[in-house]
Amino acid sequence: MDHLWTPWRYRYVSETVKGAPCVFCRMAAETGRDRENFVVHRAGKNFVVLNLFPYTSGHAMVVPYAHAASLTSLAELDSEALREMMTLARDLEGALQALYRPEGYNFGMNLGCAAGAGIADHLHLHFLPRWSGDTNFMTVVGETRLLPEDLSVTYDKLSGFFRRQAS
Image 1 (cartoon, rainbow, N blue to C red):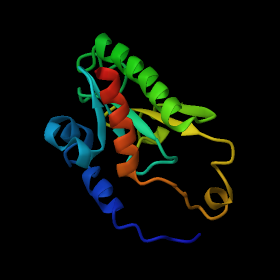
Image 2 (tube, helix red, strand yellow):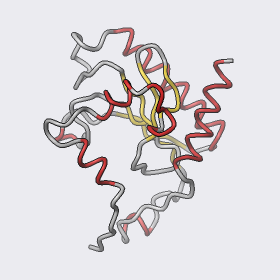
Image 3 (spheres, rainbow, N blue to C red):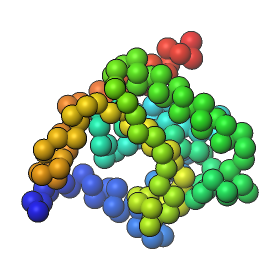
Image 4 (cartoon, helix red, strand yellow):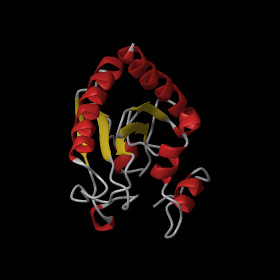
């Protein structure tokens, strides 16, 4: 296996170690830093944020403001937050369809470390646009992902879409 040096991942690794503050709670609280945090839209109980380490261009997540590890954490996560999460997922699908015209989507959650959650203590819903051939030899053989678009460009597109929808 080849190894690529990725110093920008240090921020992700250092923020998700045991005892470190929750990265999603920090993003939720830093309302004046949406561009730096890639928060593309804020609603009443959830926000939409780009994945800092995307599988495809447009890979975004819907994250509740409430710090809850699972769907059954009703003390922290109420039914309205869950309904809004699904509404935002629908809106995100519409935004991605309008902006990127994908051929399909992966949509889901990894609950708990054993299920592959990188941030296991704060529930988040992944939404990935997909195209035929987006998993090519670079991903399969080279264990490398190719992204044709910088995160700041994706941020501008998606945040602009949500702003236009709100007006």
